[in-house]
Image (tube, rainbow, N blue to C red; front, top):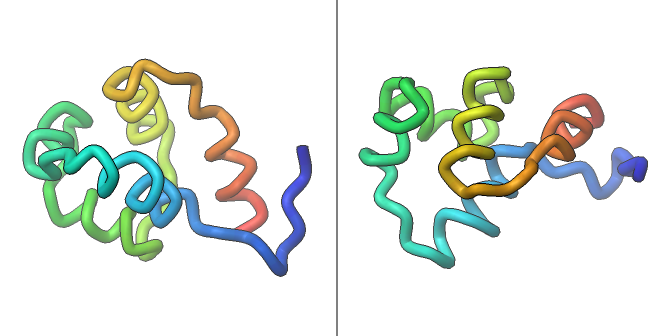
Length: 77
């Protein structure tokens, strides 16, 4: 699937809107599980920090889902 730039969403914003907010995930716990600082997670969720392999693997593990499509979102964004 290819994303058009006009509908491109930063992967962090998508994660926040689709995974974290609906499930009321504790961001402090998530940051610890990802092995990153809370501030880095917050910046990622606000679209101010790029998706890294560490964040991708951590999110996939935490949410028990294949989230590889986030890399395509990052490439377009």
